[in-house]
Image (cartoon, rainbow, N blue to C red; front, side, top):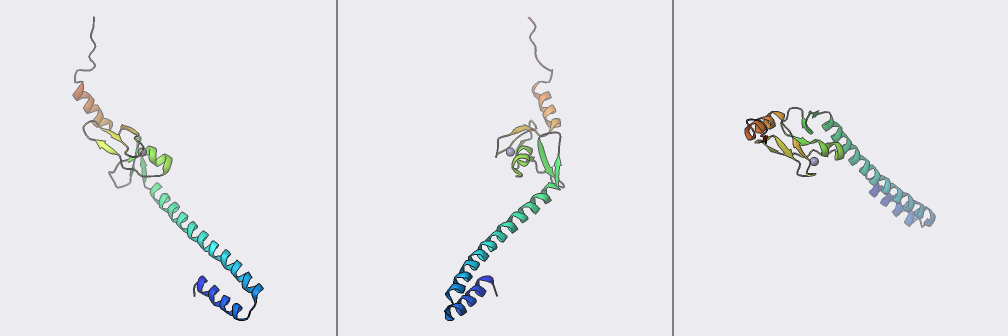
Length: 133
Ligand SMILES: [Zn+2]
């Protein structure tokens, strides 16, 4: 028997016995019980979210670049979003220059120094061009 059904059964008996003070007390208690039931549901949801976050945190890998990845995954996430909101937001990567941008917070940077260094060699193969006058 659930809480609601139990309260309903007791209320019916008290109503038939014409015990108004006890009936009113039951209504007050049932209101409190339903509020507690709601609070338990909210706390269960909050607990599940905290467990999920803790599970993800145990799989987070930090890098020299401002990105995070998960163990056994190549997906690159925004370190800014993870640090500030505990959200894993996959970044858009540019394999041509090794840079990324976060679609959520617009944070951007270099996700691969190797690719970025190759890119810099391609666009300036002879080093910086300085015009000597
Ligand atoms: Zn972000």
